[in-house]
Length: 115
Length: 109
Image (cartoon, rainbow over all chains, first blue to last red):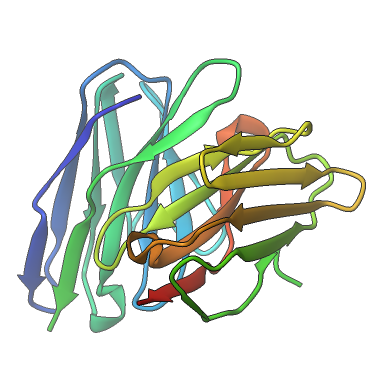
């Protein structure tokens, strides 16, 4: 298994500002992801955070809006830029462990409210 | 059509009941299958992996039918603590997971 921590756990931000969310894992993992879960909905993959290279974004998500860093195998950041109320959501960091059956673990999430 | 579809729910059952959730997926190249549980205002947590041969963990039984692209979760002798949203998760190449919308279960005394 993997233990994942995220900071901040929650924040209330003003429209037009940016917030950077940190994700720390207790062990080295190859694959890290960032998800969003909007109220009452399931999880949507934003991007795969690649160590040492640019993140791979899913359809509908772009680097200018959600820049991601992955400086090493245990840490990643997601920035939500130029926020609007539509960005209010829970943002979750996730890692995939290796083994016979890859299992995915999630951080506790960052609850973001944009006013 | 969504890549992963689940019973819309909600399911409201009495304690001790048996309840079954169904899930279908559209990507025939999917490689790994899981059921996650998400409690209110918490992150999803892995409940169990789903194997082609079927697997059981206590009161929980998961089955996979690759030919029909169908996954199921059976909960026997429901407990109040089983109340949660259950997410069907399908993983394709490069570890990318697709989540179903979830099925909400409420177990009542």
